[in-house]
Amino acid sequence: MKIRYLIAAAAALSLSTTAFASDNGEASFKKSSCVSCHQQDKKSVGPSLKDISAKYAADKGAQAKLETKVRTGGSGSFGSMPMPATPKTVADADIKAMVTWILSLK
Image 1: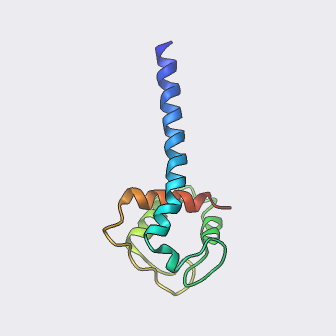
Image 2 (image 1 turned 60 degrees about the vertical axis):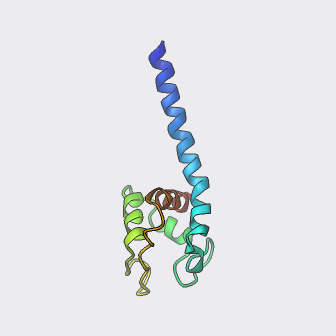
């Protein structure tokens, strides 16, 4: 009986952590100045967040790939405009939350 409660509690915590990361992702995105190149619904300097989400929707490794790309920068995924690396002042947890939020957009 106690094991059931432990499993239920662990499941609830993991779901609430995902929801929190998703909510926190938008705030981290805005705080990290990503909005200077990306908008949610339309292309600006970089692709729209919804275009990013759509491109990686079927990719099971998208979370890890995008976390790396956000941290280190890169180019070629959406054209020739390079994306700069994210400053070290942005925590890995914030990048994870941002990517989770971006991939949740439809």
